[in-house]
Image 1: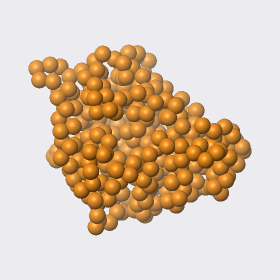
Image 2: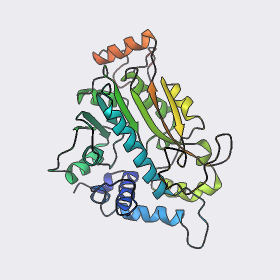
Image 3: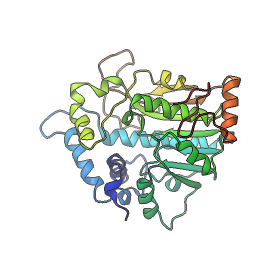
Length: 317
């Protein structure tokens, strides 16, 4: 087994959560590989989260991470399967892929390329666990850190075609990276997608980063070196700024409940409450100059200097 200590703790936590969900008789999904992904480290991380989520002799004040993870996984499973069933969607990108086995465990409606982007340590563990098993799609691992400025180069080298429609999932990513990095990632996605492509992500609101009753859970992640650093109250506007017309739903609302969300869902107008959003939408038709930038990218003719991400309007960062 690869060195699990080198893998992000959040990936191991998610694997442990999925293993626990798989053992439930009322499970929302089944991941037969999750326990192996979690290894010996993941269950301990889950125990830390459970301790602050369900404190002995006290009322729960933080969101139920086990229920949230179950709903999120099921919600995005259905999003990906619906995308794969569309004949106009020709490729799927999981960024980051994390410790999940969707390429193996989902019943895909057809074979198509599924690009799994994540850090080399994560993909090394997955390769060992999944050795000898056959995915249900054309799985293509892409070992690169999404916080680098050149990760799209690695994606293109793996065979991704920016001239064809794609479906993207940015799961468990945005609240762990600072706002400038959030915009760099979304700008990069925009640069390698055509109109009609699909994009989905999960994100917390700004208050979730600062509310006193969130402190126990936030403290656990900060103690692991994985603090939550980004949130937005307008997830639709966040994606719209990058050419994606999106809608957002909160766990517990129609289509994002599955009989498991244990808390009231606060109206969007209510302030100073914690929220999580599942936001998903479609790339809009772009201006001609943006189409030209995309075509340049498809040819490998980036205007940005090496190590930079090209923006459709010629800027680079």
